[in-house]
Length: 245
Image (tube, rainbow, N blue to C red):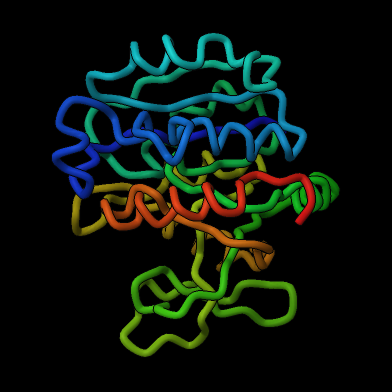
């Protein structure tokens, strides 16, 4: 199983901090933001990672991360996304890299307190399908919200006015090899992007989407400047990417 970290985008919600650099290179407490998702994957047993990024800061990622071995990786590759075509558009760049294996995808600004190793190992034993991670939140109207029955996800409502659950879909996804076929059939959304929610809904329509409720805290450090501050404070107080909670 291989890992993919998506670290592109324009970072407009973090201006002016991102005027001269990619948001994933900004500090979260005492480490660059991008190092946290790398450690999440390493703690889950992932040894090979593809980093997808864009813009003018690609050289800075290479200078910071090198071949990834300092962070516990056996192999770190890079891919360049032209423009901002959406999360699914960035993910399709990983098709040749995946080589038909299952993949775990994490957004480069998502930071977690604990680890996802058990869920990763469970997904490896599943014959096919996809898995998302969800977290209980107080303001589900601000997120994609998962509606679950048993161990399956039956619907995802995107920023619903009247949420049917308080389970927010966070930026960690696991997919089988069919994810790239799904992406090829996607049509751009109203904002002109290929949406990861449409990928997830395709698996839901097939009855092949399971979920895990994340233990510990989760933060989207790229959501806004206040969020960057909050996640930095959480890391300072409790640490991140712990092997055991």
